[in-house]
Image 1 (cartoon, rainbow, N blue to C red):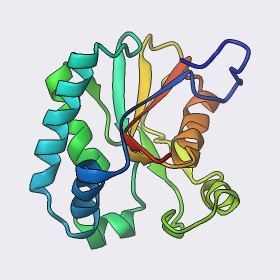
Image 2: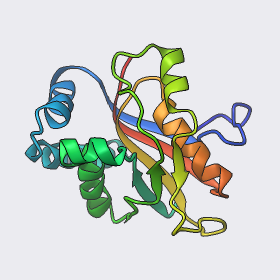
Image 3: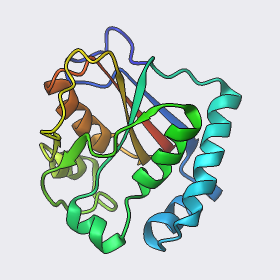
Image 4: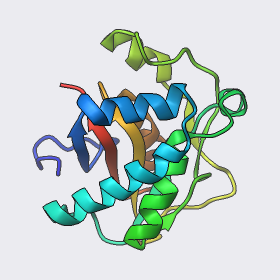
Length: 180
């Protein structure tokens, strides 16, 4: 959870990462993203749920898992969104709501991999928005933004701002891995 003195109006209320971005976790995530090894998603999701249960990790009440969206073009080229594939399985196993289209990516950006911290922050500024088909103010849900890797946090933080601007009360970040 974010310390009460560190909370910001548009900031995350908490963040959880399951593993360090190294070893088997890193290899599996890279295989899924860049070698299009979709079957890896099932194993990553299964291991993630085991890890959550084993460590008794506490997420907010009434969670809705939202995978970080890809821009439509990148999604078409890759053929799938790895965060959506894994997130769908995790949400199902944990009994959470799943909303893959709640957040939309409004612009194409340069891939974050290889960018420095300042470049990452600038690259994603303002590219996420609430899907106009949804209304989230006073829903009673907590929103959990899901992505594969937390590097600077810029992706999840920017998506979180889009939710908070539209009235979300509780927004958390959740990733499989974190770089150190």
